[in-house]
Image 1: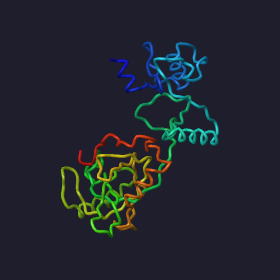
Image 2: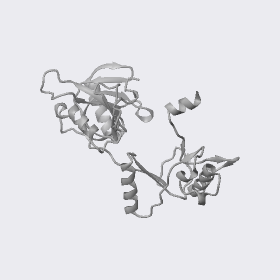
Image 3: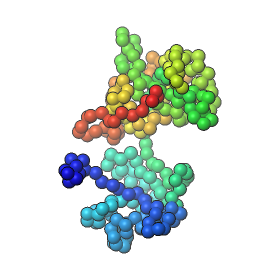
Image 4: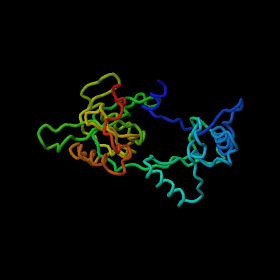
Amino acid sequence: MTAKILKDNPAAFIAFDVLYRDGELLMDCPLRVRRAALLRLCAGSDAAEMPNAAECGAPLLLFSRVTEVTTAEEIEGHFAAARERRNEGSVLKDPASPYAPGRRGKMWLKIKTHLPTLDCVVTAAEYGHGKRRNSLSDYTFAVWDRDPALEGATLVNVGKAYSGVTDEEIAQLTELFHKLSVRRVGHVHVVVPQVVLEIACDQIQKSERHASGYALRFPRIKRVRWDKRAEDADRLERVEEVYRSTANFARPTGDESPAPAEPTLFD
């Protein structure tokens, strides 16, 4: 039974780091030391003899590939190769860095790009958390399903974002959305569609949760488009165009089944 399950659902565990081994905590050790320990754990031999996972034969543990880079040109080439493999990007790590969970710094840097931005209309605003708990700082946004001048045109949601706006802009938007609120559902205000946001995202994927049939992955607000009317926002056909583009690696190459449902503003 186990063999059949594995055959029908092939999977592999790939390790990126090792934090504890044989009673020794390794988190404060340099990455180069942890990496050597990970290779020995995978291969059962000295790390120098095992330059990559393919040479491990059939190990119980696979590990991520590492490429050493020292120039901007090498970083750019490695990033381009990662994108060709349909990865979102790369992580640049200082070989002397410890493992510091929950902390951001310059020892580990994400290198990735985003798709063309979309102009979207805010349809709902939600109270935030922490210092933003009294501010409407989280915004659900939509695009038009057709030309808004056409009969029956409606806005269909494509995502939600809360990063990218300043505290001053949040205060301004909170005051405005209170005026535009048509009803409240818990901590969410459904608002008159008036405010346009320019949204950046890493990928677009199919979604059964949104009426648009799409969801933006890792969306963030680039700017508030005070210069645009709701009618100037993008159409669903533009979302579909970006979804089908070769830059959108969230687009399946074969099976076009929707991605698993993700939470919405009202969950």
